Length: 344
Length: 221
Image (cartoon, rainbow over all chains, first blue to last red; front, side):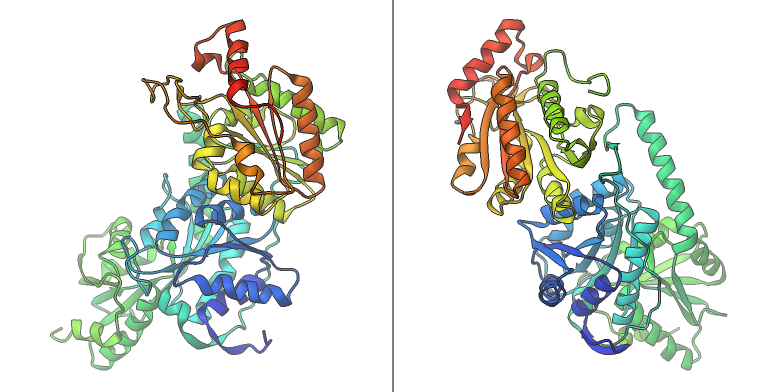
């Protein structure tokens, strides 16, 4: 790859570049549309860069657990998956939840349920955050464009290894296949990976507890750590919200369309702003509630039946009317969002 | 063993662990070993030995050790797993680790039942054997692990021992570790005691292992 700071790249190329720049040395993966190109680009890159290793595993379950094993040995490692693969990935992610393993998963959302479509959706929000058999203390980033995909993939590695929580970069088929001019100038010092198990350790690590209280205490510690991390990693964009009466809430590429819509609507004199969570977990509840107190109504716009809406409701402690545009597994353009407020 | 064993009285697991640990110490590999555990009775070994040990999920210890080994080949990666974890829920990953010749040692403890959950039918339950989930007796031939893998993994070391013949167990585990050290896959299945679920006492338990040997041939494959 070239070293120019701005390049035309596809989403899959951006992910590979970000992982390499983050210090990742291994990828374990299983082909699934629309995320396959991450695996094939990584392998292509590994033909040139001999520091990079890879394995195409027998399924997504194995890919996830291979990542867990490599991470235990102290190697920055990741996998990428989509749709039904994201379902299978929960087995390993749940172990990463329980053992606090800095596993990084790039999720490329496709239509669901079941095989759905191979194209696009925002239906894997719940799986990304809450897919395990627990509460899911995971870092989940939702980028809107390829420059952000680069930045948040870098941050996912850094914060996973810094705070010892699994991290998900939640993208989608549109983002992965698109080609854009990408700014790779994001500067961040890589957090170093320390082995959990090595010749110099003698650890006995469990993920099952005999007594209710033992697990309860462990989870309380994890929650405390997660909340402490939240103060440092939560990311949110509040766009043109000063004086707004309607607050659009959107994430990922839909937030990109919503931003355009807000520009158009404000040029028409309409008081519509945008709240865009970048970290879906931990969620920026404070900013949301501060804005919710000011507005008359929240409009959630998303390519799912309401997974983001539910997240918003979970985090609201202010009574406010919520309406929405829910188009599961379909793209949403700025014109559609503008149209919502024709009579406003 | 470093701590009081959590296994049932008469269980075969502590025998396997004790010999494994002794061999690792003799070979000066105890500091250079990562011991991964599956779920089931194997998980009780999480703090049994003063070597790096961690639990994984049911059927997932093999891919976890594959990942660990690929990241850190200098560590000897050992997967300790029951018959259900190895030959039922984790079979796909076991076969692929063997076919790829990943240099990990898989120790399969075969007691013919799902022991932790109370003695249900396992892939190794013998024809006619009654369990909670095969009340009329199993009518399905038991899975023969090493024999199944033999044709798939030409360089692998594959053997079956029993906890009531510790000389042989010792020999096979030694050879298996040497095989991993020379970068090849190894699997040792160990016919083991489960008096709790078999509802056997003393000599009956040993007798049951001898019965098992008629179905599961001990030896190298």
